Image (cartoon, rainbow, N blue to C red; front, side, top):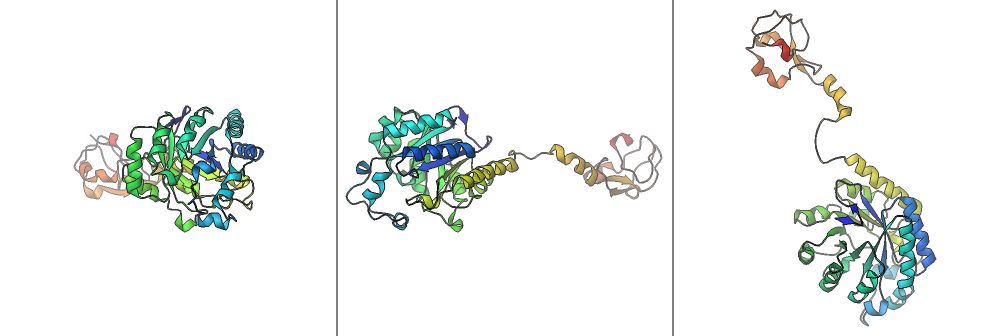
Length: 341
């Protein structure tokens, strides 16, 4: 997939998304500080959320357990103060662009899509809860922009259905566990493999743990998109702060993600330049037991196997026996191809 000219695939460095979410607590200045922290940490993109509380929640809406633990008592009262309007979001988008960051937004309602288009986001994302929201997915696809789709709390059947709706539209699925925070024992990094085994495009991992190395571990499994929440202070009241990393931690997180990718290396197996010396010194060769004269025919007692690996490989012993020497060879030296007639 390509986002504003940036190719995202396993052959490229990981694409790190700093999820600002609602960690700005409805404050544009706070959001700008988070953008600055994301840029300093080396993130590729910042992600915002755009919702209108009364459009998103019905009278039957209720709080999730993690939201109650954060101190919330009513879903409306929790979300309303966290809203950013189009003007505020526009300021954040412009600020991020000036720092070379991509901007991504999670939308929750079809009616907001046309307004989001006016701000020119680089890509869209859907929350895990909207994996079954076909009208929203189709409205976002209609924009033509790339789409990230989280898959937390979803079955493979639900994910496959969403992938069918997306069809050929540029998209990346993100393995995710919908809990805040996620215990390390429930990180489910291998869940991405299960989605890939179903021939679905699960190249990303949305991380809700509090460990700074989870993103690196996800990259080691082959993920090339990592999304992680960023906060100024994890102790701040609000639903997502507890599952977020503070700026210094986030910078270390990004560093480890890229270190993991460098250590993973290319998806091939060949002799590396740094291996050549050890290969030659530690491999073994067919080696003469005694001095041999030119014209002699090699028999098993003429040869042993010793280091180094400059001579004929031991795997060729049977085909070498019975061949005639083209020149005399000293004792206890590797036998070379040019020694044979």
